[in-house]
Amino acid sequence: MRAEPIREGVLPFLKNLASLWLDFLFPSHCPVCGAYVDRRGAWCPACLANTVRVRRLSLDTGQYSSIDEAWAFGLYHGALRELLLPLKFKKQRGGLPAIRSFLMEAGSRLPRADWMPSLAVPVPLFAEKEKERGGNQTEMIFRDWLTAQGWTWRCALVRVRATEPQFGLSAPMRALNIKDAFALASDMRPEEIAGKPVLLVDDILTTGATLVECARTLRAAGASSVTAWALASDRG
Image 1 (cartoon, rainbow, N blue to C red):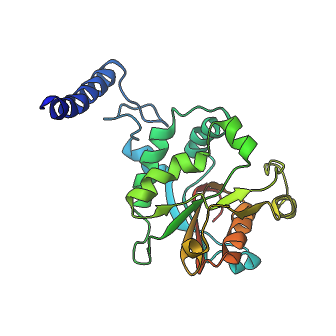
Image 2 (cartoon, rainbow, N blue to C red):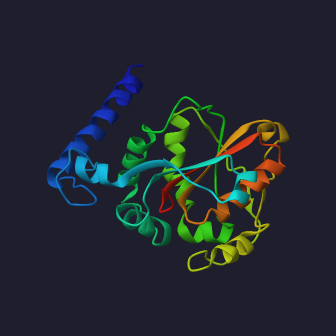
């Protein structure tokens, strides 16, 4: 009769003990400068301060017809680039704890007055590319944090065709490359999105072409507004 409660208490204790032992054997380091930190994934205060750049981004005039506003949490070139590239292209998830620690700190600096937690939607990958990468890096980064903040996470969009990598393309070519590449997921009910504010999230915002095309699809499905958040961007 008492075995189950005892087991439920022992397992977390053993996990904690294992974590402490690993921290003792392999001390945690800041992902940027290598300084010792108190836990896995933590940053030293100086490197975190240098990387967090929470700001509202300036969009091109035509982009405001789809996106109400866009925000970035940090600069891309630098520490975030070094953490994101292995996750995105090499299936290396060792940097995820540091990315999530960064997200928690940067997210706490977002203006909260206008938050209306509703539907949070990631930019999707083409199915074959997602399989190749071992998952959608945007979902790995944002899902747990956003659901903890009260957002409903839904993979509301699908990518209906493969596209060329956006890297190296001009802004007009990026827009053309991504045009009509997204559709509403078949399991999305109309009432889940119609008349609701939607938060659209991605790992990197460069020209904004991908986010704009996703937002256009969400608007067509009846979203009342679309706000975009990117973990990293070099735009002002």
